[in-house]
Image 1 (tube, rainbow, N blue to C red):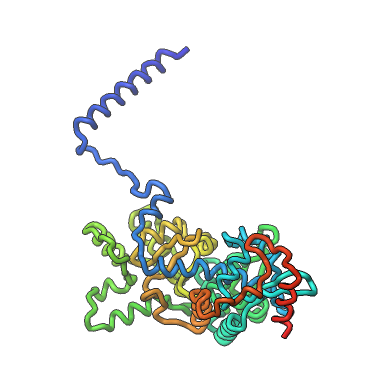
Image 2: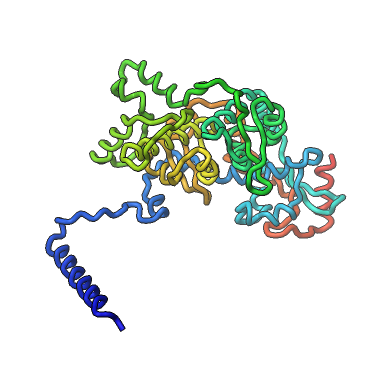
Length: 423
């Protein structure tokens, strides 16, 4: 049974609750209750302002990423760069080939060539000469830009307070950073005076570390600082010179409504000081409003610099999140991108969240392209070409498999396929 004291407490709480409800009903505007506008992470993502240019670009990239996945599988065996349709069909679900492997390959005859191997009695796929040429161009561009590639990797490590990141995190973004596929040997092992691999506390995990003394102090300057210099030299610069030292370039999706309150907050944020991505944080009080603002701005500067280091100025949120702990970012990375729509753009196309550095793009293309980016755009051009530019009968004698499973075709078709590809 309840004690007398407990009964009194319950009665008091009940009376207080009733009085509070009555007060709120009679004075609805007297009390301000702070409710988080982004009630759930999903709703926050869905409520963002869309940018048609980036959305159209991601529509194209959805198919390109599938093409690259298959291309990597084909090129995994340099001696015989081909892939059986049967094996690829087993990977259809993982690669998101909704209509099956064969149907996907047939969509892009400028990239994939389906042929029948009589020795193995089954069809295979390989890259066309045009696709192979693009692949060689990309490999050459990466090889020619090796000093830049090394600099990117060093900068990634320099943004970590311990000058260390997990090797598995680098594996996640090796393509985004323009690293060669054998970067462990050609970049890391070949430069033991700069990079060092060491064991982590976790099993089968390695850490990539910057060798002590490999770089002089104050070696790096963030990309945003270059923009500030250019902006400061403009005659029509409308930003106060004293505020410009902490500013980031902003641009918003077309049609996005910017309230007076929002503009005021952005102006306050732009003028607030912060510690740069390559600088050491010393004695920063995160609990104060100023400390929290500085911590958030430093996080923005780090991911801004990270995106600036990528070949295409874009990366999947899941991939960059691998570095969050090592960069000392205590905030949710995805929310950080959504909180700053003038600097970043987040797209959810293709069952993945991809973030773009807004200032690096104009009309869906990089403002300052590089050789690796140019080669990858050529592959995208082949994807967009689809089946255009080919005879109507093209690819029918090449592929003797069904869209679901690779079935056995009659002997006449097999002989036709053999005659076509043996010449």
